[in-house]
Length: 300
Ligand code: CP
Ligand code: NVA
Image (cartoon, rainbow, N blue to C red):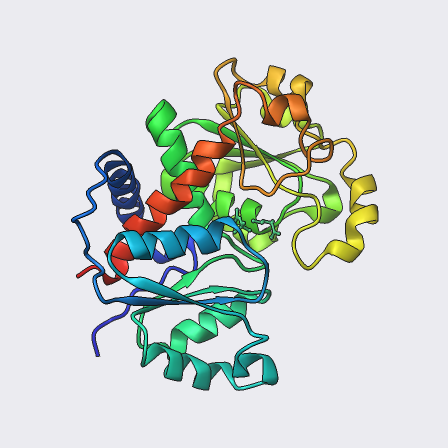
C-alpha cells in the first residue's frame, strides 16, 4: 500500500514541507480562483468530540471551495460514542471518505485512528497539540513580517496544546521561544527537551516578552478543564498579556491568540483589540492554510 501521510503533529512534516505549505497558503489566499477545484468529488470526514467555530467552518468552507465536501460527525450521533472500537471506526470511515479530521480529548485517539486509516488523518486539536492553528499563525507572521527564522516568540500562559505546538514550531521554523508560565502548568518536559536550546523559561511575562517579535497567549482553562477555571484564574493571575507586557517586546511586535479569547483574563482588551493584534487575519488564515494542507494531502 502507498505510504499515507498524516498531519497529527507539526513533526509529521519536514521543515521544508511546512515552508512549502505556508507559501502555498499565501498564494491561495492572494489568487482565489473559483475554477480551481483540485478536490472535486473528494470528501472530508470530520469528527468533533469538542466544540469548534473556526476549525469546523474553515475545513468545511475549504472543501467546498475546492469542489469537495465535508461531513460533520459528533461522537454523540455515531457509534463511536457508544464504544465502537477506534480501530474498526477508522477502517470503516476511511473506506468511504478521502481524508479524516479529528478533534479529540486524548491525542492517542488521533494517532490510533491514523494507524488504522487508509486515508490521511488530520489533527484538528487534541489535549496535546493543535498543529493546524500553527500553520495559520506561521502564515500570518510570514505575510506581515517575513521569515520567522531567528526571531523571538514569547508564549505567555498555560503550557497547553497550543504551547506544545509552538515548541514544535520553534524547531521546524527555527525561532527562539520564551515561555512564561506558572511552574505547575509547564509544558511536557519531553516536548521541551526535544526542542533544545531554542526554549527558555521565565517567571515574569515581561522578561519573556523582552525583545520579542511575536507575543502569543491562549485561554487559562482549555476545553475539558472548565472545572478548574477558578483555580486557574488564581494561578495565572500575573500571566496576563497587557500593555506592560507588550511594551517589553519590540515596538513592531505582533500579538496572536488562537481564539476564542477571554478579555480581562489571559489578555487585556486594549491589547487584543489594539493595533499590534492580528487575531482576525490569524483566524481567517485557518481557511487558507488548511486548503494548502488538504491540497498537499489529497489533491493529487
Ligand atoms: N482556534 C480554534 O481552533 O478555534 P475553534 O475552537 O473555534 O475551532
Ligand atoms: N487551548 C484551547 C485552544 C482552543 C482552540 C483549548 O484546547 O480549548
